[in-house]
Length: 529
Image (cartoon, rainbow, N blue to C red; front, side, top):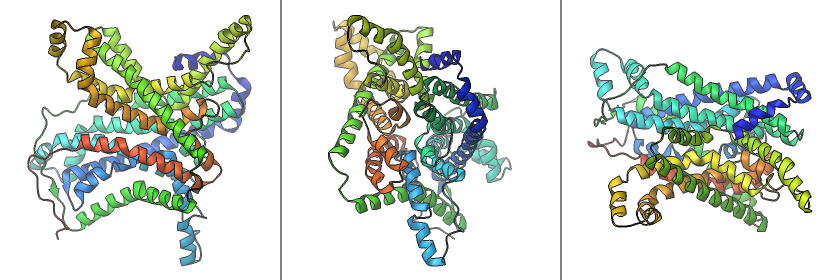
């Protein structure tokens, strides 16, 4: 529905708005968006792949620690890291203040409020997508293919570039694709940096020009970026396929020595420090300085609204995912499978695109059906769907159904069909089988899916900011309001709350991604010469 609505919005072309955009902003919006895509894509690929290779295939001090710790930046929303970096690295921040005390000036320090600063923040937040998927791919490969390439005369770098990297390419491409979709969907980071992209233009068209159709047409162009990114990746891959016949069990890592050992340790420490340790420490400092004055009834209301929205959305999304999983398993219909696949494409839609599509559709229903109906029966005419809790809940279901469908469907596929047949032979009805057989066995998958959706909804900013009912501010909205006014310290408390909540799925991911080496080599406690 959101995509169809966006396409239909072009029947009334907003000439004045588009002429204004073409004359003033459209070229800059295109250039800024392309710069972000290229910069973030290259950054997450280099950092994610390199760290995944080092932690899985090389032995160095702290390897086991960095193996899971490098996924911790998953817990930090991009807009939180954005305002932390601005508050810490700007001219009035503690770092440049210290530099002026030491050297008398800080002019040599690069400005964080720049396109490069935006790319840096997004790369540090989104590189775990590539790291996690590439890490799984390298674990599956083991050392067998690399050792065979070395025997054939390739150098270590040539073996990595020509053998290991191509085999892991599908996983790496998937991680980069997720990072790019999150980049296109991001609103909080670019708004905090005052860096105009299509996402900010959609918000300005809606709340600045009060023109929902212009916002829908801008959202259509944003979706074109997503489609082009997918098309380019598929075209680049072509018909080439890389695969291993079976999972390799040879996981003895390469032992690094001397300068290589120290270089890898420093590299991993720098990434973890800038992506997680620095922002969390700065948030704690700001919270301590601000004290408890912001912990009042208003803050309690923000927490309550966030929890209520996240709980309602997670329950609704998990229920829909469960229905889709059952349909896929018990009805072997080609078109139904296609429909289930289409339902899971909502994660590729930026929150701002969903918001515009849903609200445009609901505004048409309100204006042409519900308001005339209210006038006809003599009730006060007012919009019922536009700006309602139902509209926001629908956006969450479309956006995050893919997040819940994966764990639920995987858990359902692990249940043997013979259990269903045995329960039917004992006289149990369909609902009784679901309640007494499937739900208890699906409980771990349902809980995992619910937690993942809960945290994603808690951190979601664009859809919540655009579609929330009047007076329904959340922690994410509070962060946006404070950072837009430069109140970094007052934004620290809700930001820290979101980070703590975000650690829940990170620990789940770390628990699932841990692997056991069949031959566990003794890791060195120090770098050998």
